[in-house]
Image (cartoon, rainbow, N blue to C red; front, side, top):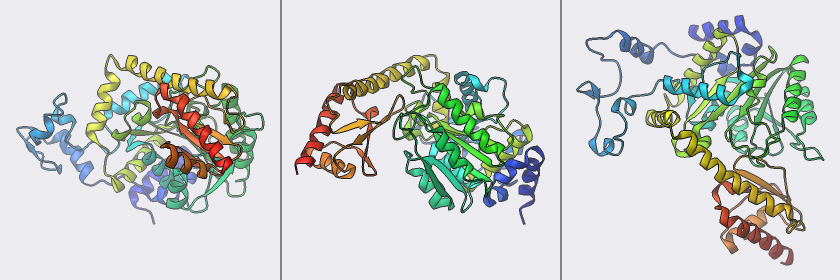
Length: 433
């Protein structure tokens, strides 16, 4: 039997959208946000005007207690924005600013209702929350054959789901929307599918065109029309790093919101890679349900997961991200970094399009993000990875037998030519061995 608070949230979801309730895992149905210390502390913050003896932090002189050797390195920030616990759902001002940013960058969200972003400890944490709430043992996770390996840990190992893989590209090197649709429709008997879309894609650096985006949305809709409850997750880790005109410039999340009652869109994004603050670990999870009661129920369940695992996310990191987003120089500085990344991606493409290395490798389509992926023609990817590392001091990532991922994000523009020359040399070494 579920806790009464969980039953209340479940009832809210059943009333607003029974399909969303059915998508929940058993853990998701059991989850709630407790009316314990945190909720009592929140009441005290509002009403305890004389003494507030509720929160487990130390204070003095009306401010959080702190050590001078720490504060002297953070003197640009008020102690109240650094040392107390952040709310379980995140700093309210940051959540508001991030939603405004989403609306500005995703025109397809205009006029649509969706939840307020909830702060996570970066994107992996957001994905693990989704897995906890929506993935039971045996549930199907649908991903392309080029996917980030951590999805397997998060969904398969932790939650017992099984992965159905479809080819990312057609023979014409376009997004394989038909294969995605077939994978979704293969879940007809179970009635549930979890679709994970990651654009720009890791490892290939591919983002679909607008027309391909429409095909993806149509594929998901046809699955829902066939009676399948579809949890569709957009992993937008590298959002904004779109380097070519023909690719989508916004998240498909906006197109999924309001698409069909059986479709639950969930956006996972964050400052981690968008704002180049990997170690800050600030991400967001946003639910694309239009009903306010359903939004509230999913937020409370998410807060329950956060409370029961990490309690809350880093307050200093949230404060620093908020201040950065509000800074007048933010847009200019971000544009400068974007141009640096674009120049590196363009140089990679120029080198590979020259045909100089075609006898050794070709590349999968890429137009965005941090990465690109080579398809090796004559040697094993892992053997080449080890050879490059041992003989030339070059680090790459092998994926399967033929694929080698290159992170141009961490190679200076002036070094890219040499990088590919060494990779080619490594291939020739192995061919002659």
